[in-house]
Image (cartoon, rainbow, N blue to C red):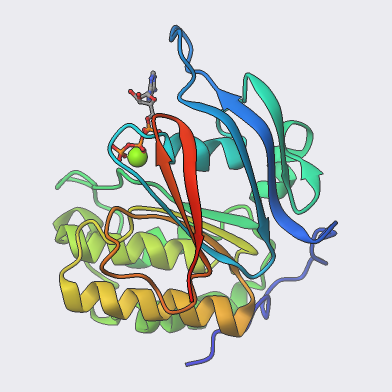
Length: 242
Ligand SMILES: Nc1ncnc2c1ncn2[C@@H]1O[C@H](COP(=O)(O)OP(=O)(O)OP(=O)(O)O)[C@@H](O)[C@H]1O
Ligand SMILES: [Mg+2]
């Protein structure tokens, strides 16, 4: 299916300055109370429409990198720009045009929000036409194969099903920049392949810039352009995908 961008949004988009969607220049981020930075001297530029895979062992700094890009963590040194804007100054505005699917998303069994409501929460900071919401929720849930789960409480779903719901919540925002932290972690092999294709289509058809963290290099999405490997807080290699 085609999932065209911005159809229901009323506001003009943020000015997309410069040729890079993301620019990190000598970025280090240190957690409060920690002596060593969790990421150090990171330099990375991501073009609009690129699909970047970030890989590396546990503790390498992958999640820290994503959260530094979004301005959820403040770097101790260096600069981060998203859409050409300095994240330290414009994080709130920038985040309206980004979606983030965090690594730890599992909801407790007693969580009562329905799948429908959880997907709708993705629109909270967006200016949208209310009459389009129902159609959009149905469309994105179909894209992720969860259309039969819309009335179920989120806490009653399996890990893989919940993962799809949170990806749907991220996609309904029609982000310019989509950040996903281990989105395949609870999915079986067929589901991983299916989701990799959904994300690839989003990237090639809508021009969405995607930064995805994944341990799983057996499923490299078709649209992926580069694989960034991190160890111990540093980028150790960046390889082009042919
Ligand atoms: N909230 C925190 N406070 C202090 N240190 C932290 C915090 N979160 C992460 N760290 C440390 O920062 C480093 C990088 O962690 P990060 O979560 O970015 O790694 P990761 O590559 O995402 O690992 P994983 O594959 O396990 O998700 C680790 O040494 C970790 O212990
Ligand atoms: Mg992580």
